[in-house]
Image 1 (spheres, rainbow, N blue to C red):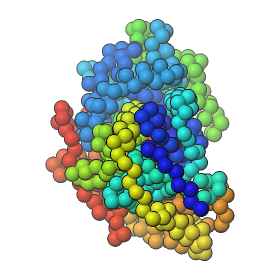
Image 2: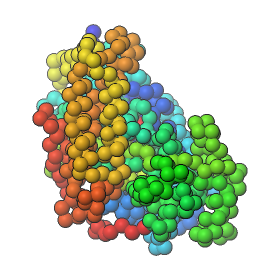
Image 3: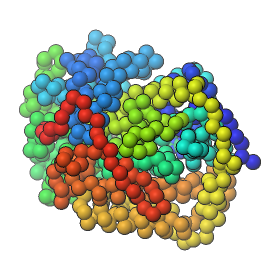
Image 4: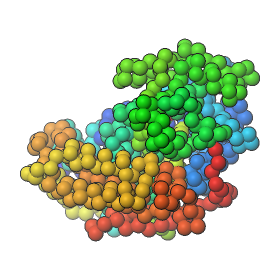
Length: 597
Ligand SMILES: Cc1cc2nc3c(=O)[nH]c(=O)nc-3n(C[C@H](O)[C@H](O)[C@H](O)COP(=O)(O)OP(=O)(O)OC[C@H]3O[C@@H](n4cnc5c(N)ncnc54)[C@H](O)[C@@H]3O)c2cc1C
């Protein structure tokens, strides 16, 4: 028997965005949070480097500079009203987290310490500014723990290890979700006035990724299947520094602390590609520079990796070259102890996973699939929109990495996602509760779980010959190679064709575990369906965009083309294929300019 629950607000996801939404929604409405993971295992907990806010603790900084950097970093595809809102909220919301008990690092005077991050600058000098607030290299972990504790204190109701498999939409209004209780395999219907989707990203579409195993794009796939488009899916960020072959992230904070990228000739090659920002240029710029170095045979030993060097002697050498100083004006000189205290987890990862001690040896790195700029389209107030006229679907909200507000446009700056999740998570919680207070429950359709039950039964009892792991691997390889850092018409077409073939083969997939209790085999098969849907729209949207902008870089159209392509894509998943539509970018203060670093 399917259990039916009723809550005014249902939040799907318990990462930073979901918990922030839960905290605020529960103050005004009966709220439940559903999460396929135990909340503190959410990917927010893996975030290392910091959260961006122009506090000016260490040097002059202003929210307006943060806004401009974000717009420029987005390659002018970010909606400027949303960017301005996020950057102006950044300062009060970081203090709010501080007051909740988040243990930020401190300056000697006791203020929240800040470090530089790529693309964040003093707009007057063009030099990197210290804007990232951090708790060593485990900022996301601290955010997640702090918010979870606050939720427990405020008696938020959690349904842990409940995987949401469908969104209930009745007469164009969101009316709840269908979830599987993982421990029992039972289906549950959650009837709601408002649903907030906060399910995070989908880096598992790609072979080499920094993302958790759980990053399978469930939220975006579920909503696409109910008619909601996905916005700007062609923009996926490749972070320059993943551990070679493993993809595990080495935070940009390493370069913030003075680490540099080095090629096989021992050159600090970023000087050539970005003379001012150098190693702290935007991620798309650094990833492309690395790719070119490797293509021209300057990878280490001719291989597909470069070195990230944070040994004190290297840091001190280049700090001198750059004329870098401490906030008190003294020269920037670091010791091994200081590196160890600022980057403990990174040092630990390298020692554990690759047997390298970063204070003694350089780290082998390559670009790794990291962050989804696109996602479920929303207004600045996190309401989900379903077309190019920004028509809102009543009762549906989205926040965090799954959403596309759009504050990151074609390329996200480091530290802006932790900011995005807390600012828009809070907004979603407030708005959903407010909406719920003024709305009635939409009556549920008969048997809202029928479609899910049928889909799971087909997967569970299928006796085809295809393996989930094979299909997933083939998808990941083609997406990483052909829809990665550099893209070509031919390669993207191959990816589109391959993903189509894999979606066909998915109908013949075989699941070994036919039981109900903790059937992760079955749920992984279901997740592969989400990944394939997401890969499909990503490849089609990328092939269609005939320009290079931010993370989308193609050899046949190497320039940004504002005349034809200064617009957001909206991809609709239809039985006959992907339908693409476009909507304008909101421009307020900053007219598009060429990006110079
Ligand atoms: C290694 C790494 C380091 C990073 N470092 C930084 C950084 O220093 N600064 C920065 O700004 N950004 C950083 N980012 C990006 C940032 O951490 C993420 O974008 C952000 O934390 C995402 O938060 P979220 O709340 O949207 O999703 P998550 O924290 O991933 O939470 C998603 C939630 O959704 C739930 N969920 C998913 N699918 C379902 C389903 N079907 N049913 C039920 N529940 C579901 C999960 O259980 C989880 O609770 C980093 C990312 C990675 C991968």
